[in-house]
Length: 391
Image 1: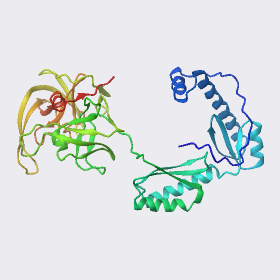
Image 2: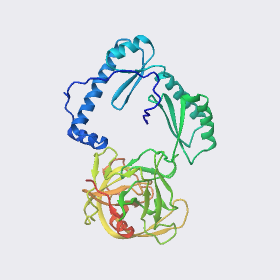
Image 3: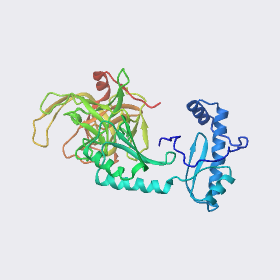
Image 4: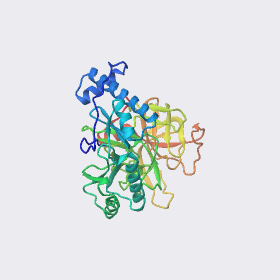
């Protein structure tokens, strides 16, 4: 919430005398505060002490039965909304600044709740947020300047009924939830779900742009990618095409606010496994895979540079795919794109396996199973990328 210094009504109070700092704070926190505020660490500690004393006085004031209708800090001073003369006197006696004649927190929360109801009727896709701002004594509505849709206008019309209790601000920013996407997670191609693949590995190019490296058949058609209802990426390249001589690798650009994590999720089987590199493991090495359908399953690498013919279960043409690795890891539909790792070295992404193969979820090593994976090192080399590793 943006704190506005203007608009105090009936503001009065005296300077708050604060005793010498007695609390000890984490040095890293003090350094961060002093750097962001342009003050010394000692001044940062004094500010925290001052705020702590005032907060304690507010707690005591509320416990005395005073009619307090919200409180907020401005420039290090706590200001209290008071509703009657007796409460004002009690607040001043404790050295707190007071404001009278304000709408106050309770009234503003009712306005905000009314806007919540309006949003349920007219979902405002061009409105970033609305929130009580005690300092300005209004509910501040933030509107994206380039997205004044019909639903936005209906929402703003409902907000206007509250007069100057609502303040509308425009901004060029757009908001989106942040997604921390673990390799092996389920990714879909629309916010409402439907078909899915599994998440491969994060990588960067020489300019620092971030990508997801995945199975090419997962991003055929270059779809948008979602984690639940949160958009986190857009496919940009694939070397897979049904019925064509193919290589099963592809990449997607990751949204600026999101990130592919540098540890592989194991669906609760073994915590997370940090990625330290992408060195290709030798044939016979132990390898495990994380995928949305069968979870965490393990086996051994059988061979590299394998060419396979995939049959389309929907009746489409067969597709010849070259350059794969083979393994005794159990996979099933929906695991495609999921992350293979050997030790702490990322190995590749699920490409395919036998039709109708069944796996126990989080089954570990299951005898008699097999699958194919797109080696990550080949995809990184082809697209000029470097795998993202844990620090």
